[in-house]
Length: 384
Image (cartoon, rainbow, N blue to C red; front, side, top):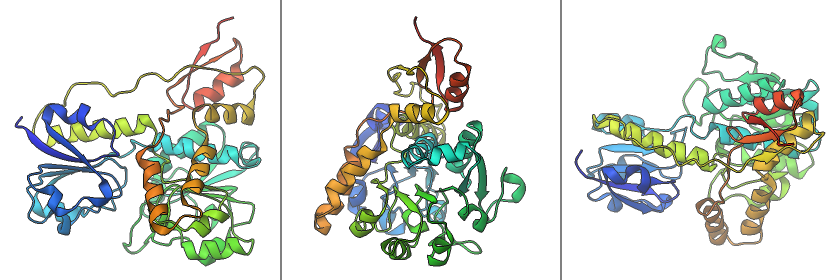
């Protein structure tokens, strides 16, 4: 394999470790990548903040583009195909991280978790890798799921429902692809009419794309005490977000739902293997940098929602991200707020996933074992 010049978003994890044997790696700010930066570059690795299109690539020698994200609405796939440029993304790499973000939001909001476990329903908009992973996890926990995705045939959806039915669920979680394509464009899928139809005690979580919701309509409703309880990880206009909207949502975070250490490492390794395949080489050996997270011991007596809330919170405290975003943006001018948003992503703390981690329980706690395994944990007996 000849040595490659590889340019990557500095927010990608372990690029040098995974790609170092394939060539020379340079890291840059993904928001500021320009055509001039691509001089001599063979491989471009980005995240969602970089628009990859003709204006960026024209005249370059780039022959492979990889995005460390599940979605790729920021990449002009048709242009890449016309130029014969290889492409790969990382579908599902951050799915479990986002699922656990959604569970954390639910667990934090009043008694939403208890109500779901008691027969309430979760509505999912978008049934890609993340939507499917969320549906599987919630179904394993005994939570009823309704799914809306008009781009998929009804027989592909396990729990197909209309958009109006999904908007009537106890909790709504949005994971649709952002598209302007007809006949079902998702841009501003939820406008004022749809948002007005959502019951006021409903929890709505958007961890898909900010443009799936009409931000102006949502703010208008929240300001007059209408609209759903709202958790936003994604925002229209990122990194310059609406500080006014942030003041009205229950939880706001800086587009980090999929930012677990485990998910980031997996995305990078998936792109490495895709590049090797594109070049006609064998997959590069080397394990993902995923040292075991410290084992957690379950406090005695926890059951049902209390147990789930403890387990999710043991790995991820969503309130920390909400506090950090408000501190960086509220009261700041536009430039400082935008920089603050990006800084939170660039310097995001190490966050490990609950799924795949080891938890210890007292012997014979069958209910605990069932729920923890449904969360993806490896359950062992606690030392007596």
